[in-house]
Amino acid sequence: MKIKRQKQAKKTISFYKYNFNFRQPFQILLDGTFCQVALKNKIQIKEQMPKYLMGEVQLCTTNCALKELETLGGQLYGAKIVLQKFQVRNCQHFQNPVPASECLLSMLQDTNPHHYFIATQDRTLTAGLKKIPGVPLLYIILNTIVLDKPSQSSSDQVQAVQLGELVSPAQQQSIRTLKEEQGIGQKDGERRGRKRKRKQSNPNPLSCQKKKKKGLPTPPRTKTDAMGKKKRSRNKRQKTEGDTSSSAPSVKAP
View (cartoon, rainbow, N blue to C red):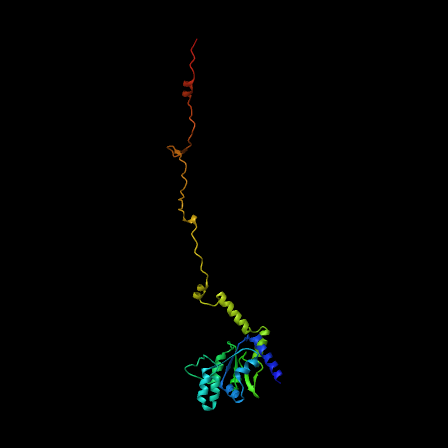
């Protein structure tokens, strides 16, 4: 019977590992009802819980669960002593304590983001836990700790993910991580803060030189006559007829 119970627990743990990203050490939230039954049946929680779950565990509770045992009186004094040995997780009801069942449900929220196991004997709390997908439930039957099989809500969510209708919690976490790395969905100030700063470099020496003034080319000078018409200048000197006759040699008459 013990081997069969171990195989069933291993199968259930694998279900939560692969579909809801549970990892060791397993975080187990306990209330006073579980500790009271364990004390009555002489179950050593710290010793038997790691063996049954086949891994490291972190046993924890809340302030509301401790306050509830204090108000119930001396009959649950032993359960209070056991529960005080575990880690106390902060809840939203530090100043105004609420019943343990309400407090544990609030710790799980809608998707159990912190991957808690819940150890309780409270039937009202158990009914509420089965409506939340991805919540492993532990209770005591016949002097033994039992891990309940996955609830219908957990099985329905896994089936919906396999059909492509939903995104698994592991995929949601990877998507959030990628968005944070890329700066998607953040404020402008946060985005600017994530931008890389440019390295300071020396200025280009060519850009430091003075710019040369570019002047317009001057047009060539042209002579104009009295009528305003342009005259073309001639470089060669024109010879007149008088000049040619005076330059000719004189011949004496015979």
